[in-house]
Length: 185
Image (cartoon, rainbow, N blue to C red; front, side, top):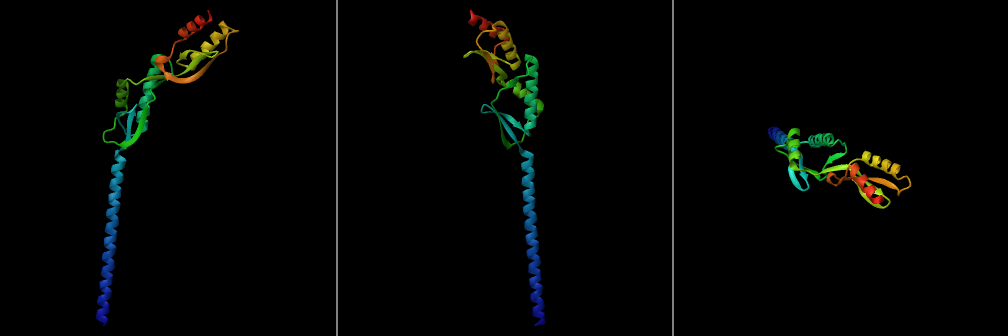
């Protein structure tokens, strides 16, 4: 019986060893699969950029896109001599798999060619209850208020309300002042 017991013990030992080897192999295979999926996912994760529902392209990080928008806004500010000019507000960045993301310079070119609406962080000029028009900056609104108060010290109360509006809807200082003078006659 000793021989049979020894053989039985040896068989159990071999079964346990084979079971450990299979379990270890399965765990290693599972970890390799997870690592591969994670690496592929990390390499291809990014954002698809939409403007008013239309896809403009892909970007790896939001920083690249935001830097391109900021550069364009800075250039617009210099061109219009107004730091309150901003690129249109219809952008949406949606997480997506990215295979061919655009770089900073490419985004600047795409955004410049797209014809995106320009907005101003401006102000609406209001005299009494009547809107006189909008200007492209709060500094210009302050100048208008001061000028109006000097010209018409006992006139209707004037104020301005800060607002973001299309640049095409803004008027310059002279145009609004002419409208105010025309209203007073």
